Structures are given as C-alpha cells and as structure tokens.
Image (cartoon, rainbow, N blue to C red; front, side):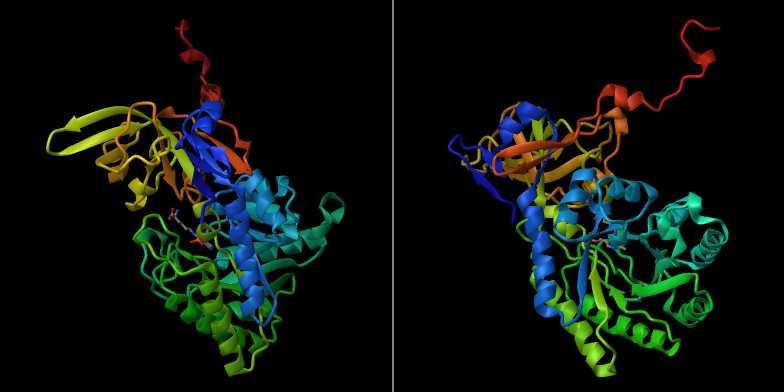
Length: 447
Ligand code: LLP
C-alpha cells in the first residue's frame, strides 16, 4: 500500500524521495511518513462507509497510534474526527486546529483536570466507569452554577458523553492488546447497563449521545466485529426503554495490517462492509432506526504509511549461530518487538536489487539483550553505513517511543511527490536534560 519504488540509483524511494538522500539530509534514524498512503486509507474508510452503511457514519482516527500536530491536521483535513486518550493528546489536537466537536476523549482513569479540560473544550467524553460518570455530573453542575464568563461558551451546554462497555467478545490477538473480553480494565460491564441508563435519565446535565465498545487491535478475523455489531444494537434497544436519545454506536477500531508477507488482513473495504451490514441487519431485525455509526481505526490508517530508516553499524558474527547487525536506534523508537514480540521485515535501501543471500538479526543499540528489532531477516549482503529500512512503523512506534539510555528521539519527515517536510524535529541532548533539575547542594564544587 505504501507509495514506494526503486529508483535508478537502486535506492528505495518513498513518496518520491530517495531514502538515502533523506538520511543524509535529516540524519539517522528517521521516521518517513508517506502522506499519500495515510490520506488514501482515510478516504477508503470514509468512502466504504458511504457505500455500505445506509445511515450516517463518521470515521475518527485513534491518535494513540501516532499523535502529533501534522498527523492530526492531515486526518482532520480528510474529514475524520480524532480519538484522544489524555489531556496531552487533546491539547495536541486542539493546537493542530481540529474542531473540538470532532474530538472524543477515551481513557479508563481520566483525571479531574483532564475531564474539565475536555468539558471546557466541548469534546465528547467516552465515559469508562462510575467514578468518572459521577465526577462529570459534578463538573457539569459546577459549570452551570458558576457564572460562565470565566468559562468558554461550550460549558453552558450539558456535557456530551458516550458510554463505553466491555462486550465480552474474544478475538485472536496479543493478550496485551485485547480489550473486549470481560476481564478487561476498560468500560462498564454490560450487566450494569440498566443502572447506567437509570443514572443518565436522572442527570440532564449529561447528554448521553452514544455507546462505545472496542474489542482489540491487530485483528484479522471479521467475525468478532460482526458479533460486536449485533451486541451493540441490543444495548441501543435497551436505551430506548429508558427514553434516552442515544443515536450513535462507536464500534472501535482494531483492523490489522501486514507486517510481513505472511500477514493477510481483510481490506478496509471488507471490514467496513462487515460492520455496516451487521449493524444494519440487527437494526432491521429489531426495528431500531439506524444509529450514526462511528469507527475509530488507528493502526489501519497510519501503520503502513511510515517506514523507519536506520544506518547499519557494527556487525558481530557468531560462527554457526547467528550474525548480528546493529542499527543506530532500536527499542526506543520501536518498542513493539520487545513488548509484543512483533515481527517486522527489512530491506537494505541502497541495494534494492541485490539478491537476499544473508540471514541477519537486526539489533538495536540499547543496553538490553532483548533489544532486537528483527530475528533472522533475509537481507542483501551489506556494509556499515548502509541504509536499513523497516516498513509498517506508522502505528505505535513514535507514540510509544522513549528516551531509554538517553537516546534522543528521531526526527520524522512527511514525504509527498518528492518533497520532504520535517514534522518532528530530532531531539537534542539539551532536550534530554530540559526537565532535569540539579539541587544546589549537588552541584560540582559545593560541599
Ligand atoms: N479505540 C480504542 C478505544 C482503542 O483502545 C484503540 C487501541 C483503538 C480504538 C485503535 O485500535 P487500532 O485500530 O489501532 O487497532 N500499542 C499496541 C496497540 C494498542 C492498541 C490500544 N488501543 C501495539 O503496538 O500493537
């Protein structure tokens, strides 16, 4: 799906830019985000919903996959809303100029400050638990009783909320990214739905507009989402018994992407078709009006749109055992292999037509044996200084990056039609100590 090709110099090109040139210009390692691939995925989601869903629909980008000003601005310009999970993500989206009515705040332990920030901004809050529901009712009452001159105009309105439920649907993915089963920290248990609806019907300071569920991430099967749709329409039916004007269902995200040749996820269109038809059929069966259908994909929007380019450094050959090549990044820019045993593949970006004769383990530069990005990659014979590129690093790489070992985070460039624009500046050593404070008595020379 990435707009990549090989140029006359036998180098990999992404978005019309030679990766070797990009490394020279912006230094290494480097996240390279292809704008066209990201925009195409946004359009595939929107157009597929228009094609297959008979009611209104909205796609919101799960920005936990990669939240920064440029990415928020791109997806918003494609007409997508944005799912945020913290005050920091909310702040970034607002700074990117995203309309707050297109923002949805998630999280299982939002602080009071985050809830107030969200309510003041006018975004929709996806309520996860009782404490939050009660806190929001309090916040809304305080807003109503205090003169609104100090508050922005949104606070005069009831706070817009949705309710997150744990649907009890199993799917095959890594345990850490499975969220829909009953044993999950997220959302209300469906057994509590009557109590929640009761509460909402007595609290007009909260305007509940919809219900939400998310079952997990990197999912290749379509059945769990089909089953989820049917369960959610049952919840909707229950809401009507309480006279609540709930007219939105948010079915979460979760569609997987290809990391290696053996991965075979459904297409965006197939996924949208499945959930759209399942919701529409369940609504027809129960004679419920079609709700506005929201989906919130992250990985399948941005995952394939980015590659990470590294420079090859030291080699270690252990005869009859393994050959390691180390790169100038690792678990700090891509923590997914060490966290989830995720499998990636790689290419030597300056030897694209050289036969893949080598079996190489790509290690990061961190002081940790588990800092291995790829085990047994099939690669062209290479030399130190060559450019190694790992595709499909758009989702949960930059957003989960760290400064482990005090390694500055890489830069990110946005490429499009041969142009490259910096969207994240490379961190410097000064950035690393910016928040450090040295108490006077510890300064060298003091006793
Ligand atoms: N909505 C909710 C409420 C979520 O929790 C998530 C992901 C999404 C939407 C987007 O799911 P996606 O379409 O990206 O699968 N760090 C892990 C993934 C964690 C996913 C967390 N929630 C990884 O690197 O695989």
